[in-house]
Amino acid sequence: MTMSDCCEVETTGAGPTHCADCGQPGRAVHPITVKALLRPEALARLSGSAHRFCPTSSCPVVYFGEGEAFDRQEIAVPVLQKEAPGDRTVCYCFAISEGDLRREIAETGRSMAAQRITEHVKACRCACEVRNPQGSCCLGNVAAVVKALKALEAETAVPTADSSCC
Image (cartoon, rainbow, N blue to C red; front, side):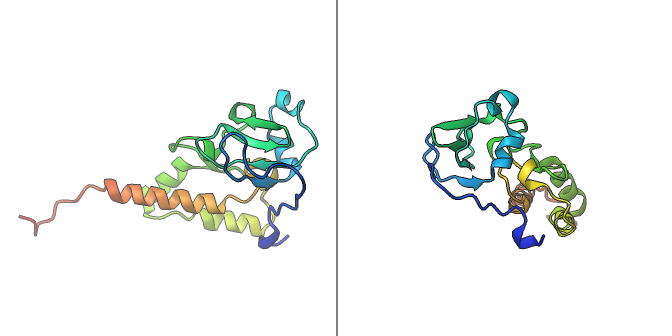
């Protein structure tokens, strides 16, 4: 496996491409992703149709397909895109949370999480298709969360006393 084919979804086919609840486009997900992450009672209702992941934060739907939708309460793990910022899981394979990223940035001024995850991916240790609700690699999410945390830190930074002041 190479970095380029990590978590590649080859699912194409019939079915809606936009979420019926919010109207936004969804991302195709492999059937194993949906099966792995649905709670048992929701899994019992799963049809064989193709499914998509709805990344819209304000929409309760996580997966949708022909004539069916599964919302947040029917998923076995909290979904990054559906949770409020705080201590959300950002990397499901290696248990990296938003809080972990925040602490690393506070302590060192940066995060090396993306580099650590990349090394794991190169060593074929990831399992994004069965652990990450979006069914694909988290590196884009990690980068976005790190960027947001750095911006927030910059906004809330307290100026230090400087002898040249006043």
